[in-house]
Length: 185
Ligand SMILES: Cc1cc2nc3c(=O)[nH]c(=O)nc-3n(C[C@H](O)[C@H](O)[C@H](O)COP(=O)(O)O)c2cc1C
Image 1 (tube, helix red, strand yellow):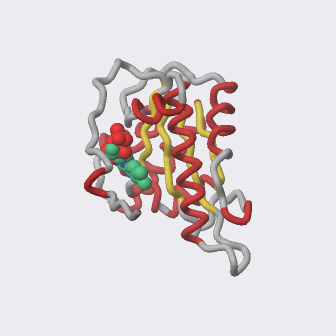
Image 2: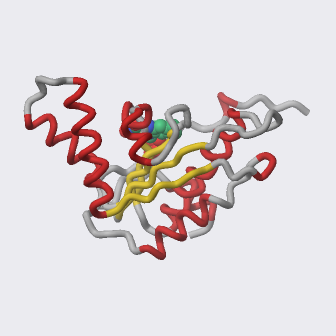
């Protein structure tokens, strides 16, 4: 599959098989991610790869955090929280470094890390994997950040759920670029 084909056929897929993703494929995803452009070559992206019991530990963090927030939550709700990271065999969390010197801008570090995420998603598509970029409250949850080894003020921009697609999805038809584009010549 060439790059344009991978870009055009990529879509968010949450329904994946439980089969593990081999380590060499995970490394290919990460290697594609770090080919992204980044100003001042600060490589602001940080990846945490969660497989197997790593996802269960994240689930425990989510359940504990939910119980703190909702002390009367029924056991079933806690179990639902606990099982959320198990929706895919591979979860890759992506954090962003805060700038360490004045010339480096936070927004540019975020842009670079987001570009790395997109590279990773395109690579997943090219490798026959399905992926979904998730954030939601989990990405802003201080307990989650702490568990992943990120500082409280460090942006956690993605929790990428990845696996082999459970079914062949119908192609996505997206609006074109025309209404978002002005040509100046
Ligand atoms: C920064 C970011 C955060 C996202 N967070 C979520 C999320 O929390 N839950 C979700 O279902 N999808 C999330 N998505 C995926 C979008 O919903 C998805 O890309 C959009 O529906 C378009 O679908 P497509 O990826 O198939 O083109 C996120 C995407 C981005 C870029």
